[in-house]
Amino acid sequence: MEPRAYLGSFGRPSKPPLTAVSYISGRPSRSVGIVQDIGHILLPVDDMDKALAFYRDLLGFRVVGKGSPVWTVIETKGCLFTVSPTTEIPKVALGSKADSSPFEFHVDNFEHAASDLESKGIRVRRNGVHGGTIWDPFGNVLRLHDHLE
Image (cartoon, rainbow, N blue to C red; front, side, top):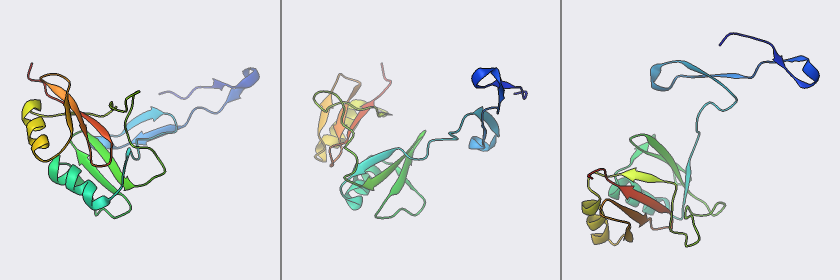
């Protein structure tokens, strides 16, 4: 981006917007703005050991770094979450029935995944053959779907 004058209030030149440099994937890229990247997407949980048993051991997320009882970063392909025991923010459960989520995860085969989760006592609601909704032990709602159609 070429430097140029930006007009502020009353037509006077103002400072150009901040330029952030990102080195994600080893390639520098420039963006205009203050925010450089997403720091944390927080999933509120009640108990870290229980959270790791669900997200790491059952769903297959990987722990990034050391982790701690206060907060732990977990990842799956294309996504990082921070699980943290907190009562300061509500559980992720949207809609009038608190049964929807902004989080959609891909699975190889939804029916197999749903059956496996149900056999382990996880609440599953099928929204069709290829997708549905699950609840973590703390009341956070997650959606799963496959691309078998």
